[in-house]
Length: 159
Image 1 (cartoon, rainbow, N blue to C red):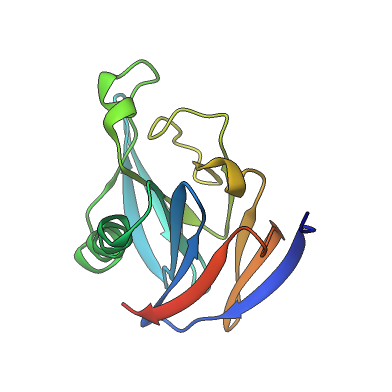
Image 2 (tube, rainbow, N blue to C red):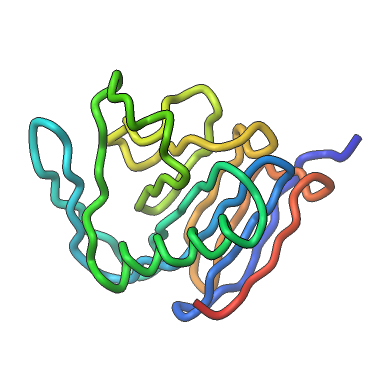
């Protein structure tokens, strides 16, 4: 049995960090200084990010298709400026979402929430091996807290 630990991974603005488990993939990019929009059923929320803040995408499934989808989703949000969409808790599309995204200084992965329904940008739905992992943006990279490197492959690539 592997022990959970903290890891630092160096990434630049032009790179994406991938965390691949048995049932899901997480992608992480630096958000940079910017203004973003979160759309809920009731309101539009403006979110401001700093240089080391992150966009974190969680994909349900594995393989090349999910990895490419995460890269595309992060590109659409960060580089194209697509808004983050938050669905109502009982929305039927929640069960069909393949990728969900959060933004901010840190994100905690939880397998106990419904995908796409949380306007709070510090929690994101993810697979079991990621439950409790906290991802924090730091100068020069990303700090992964409470991660089990024996169950999760970690690598970076150009975005």
